[in-house]
Length: 113
Image 1 (cartoon, rainbow, N blue to C red):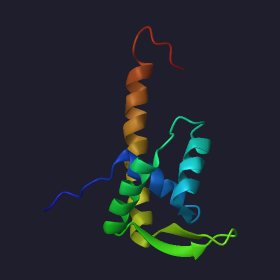
Image 2: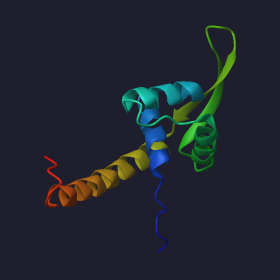
Image 3: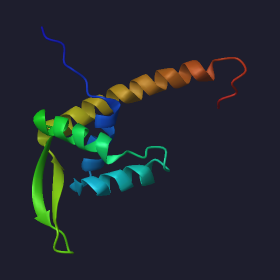
Image 4: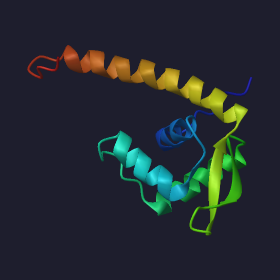
């Protein structure tokens, strides 16, 4: 049986942004920075290869739409397959991060509550 390939953490963040609404690239960059209190400040050179990979894997679809300014923008939409991947990977991340936090909390001298 072939092992299912898991998505990268950057892909997980992008999929989570698209779970709420379709977005264009710059909008994703700004929203990720806002939601993470500027911890994640993704560059376009990082975002677009991630989006192209997600599109190739069938997790997102892209379409063109005119912005209120009249300029055409490329929006990305989470597919059903992308939503399923997001749910699976979010659960895996929750388990992983919970285990890391448990180890850190039990480490003498760290005082992490």
